[in-house]
Image 1 (cartoon, one colour):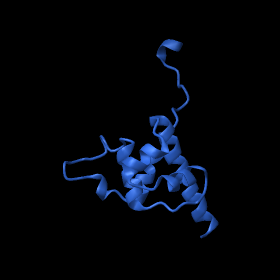
Image 2 (cartoon, rainbow, N blue to C red):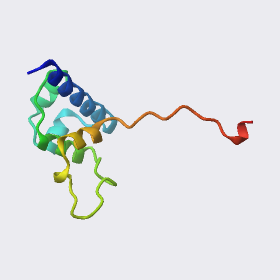
Image 3 (cartoon, rainbow, N blue to C red):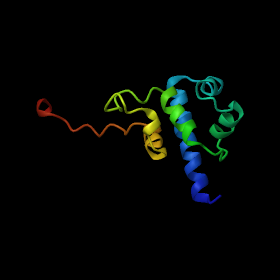
Length: 106
């Protein structure tokens, strides 16, 4: 496995860990929600380059409740999301831009 691939996998696991903390989901709970082995989840969030499947990513998106508002129609489900789309949904939201000030500040 190339170093670039290892770094990408570790980044994705970091996104998953951040979402777990945000939603207060334990590795055991994530395992029960996704069907992914708890030992692999623990190893991944510790920084080991544990492979991530498309199905696991989709299940994480569902477990963290990241699909609401994303679907444009009833027929569109999380099953149609690509690997990269799931990764982008797991990423933390962008930081707020610096305060611009407004008219009343003058």
